[in-house]
Amino acid sequence: RAMIEQGCGWGKGGKSFALLIKSWSGAIGMQMLVNAKKENDEFRKSIAGAVIMHPAYFKEHGVTEAIEGLPVVMCWARDDPKVPYNIFSQQYLDGGAIIMGPESGGHANFPEFDEQAAEFLLSLS
Image (cartoon, rainbow, N blue to C red; front, side, top):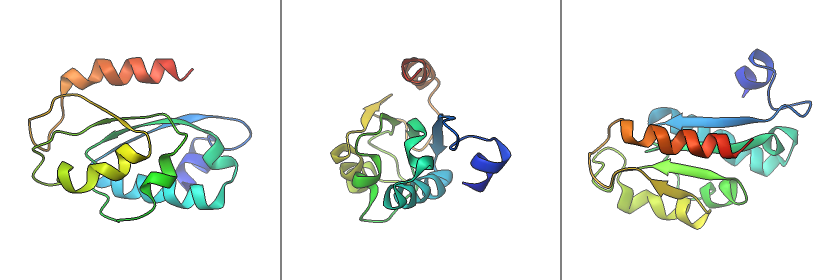
């Protein structure tokens, strides 16, 4: 959060931004969203949306509330062996996340998701 606010100058003073997180950075990004939701401050209100790819965030509580009301698109293969979709996805879906991209392919980058993510990000402005 300090890098976003102090390094980039986003998240305060009305400067909105989109949060893009993937895999292990998902743990950091999701914890940041959970904390920001609890604080209900200017930083949280500045997040225009989020693109999340198979987040390695293994907490059972807080995700649904953290993303409620926030436009979120996700790419998460149902056969991901590192971050099991069937165990962790429901809390994101309950928060309103939309899952796009391929249904199979494991824990990988999916070039076909690039266009979907770009369209989503452009729709935020």
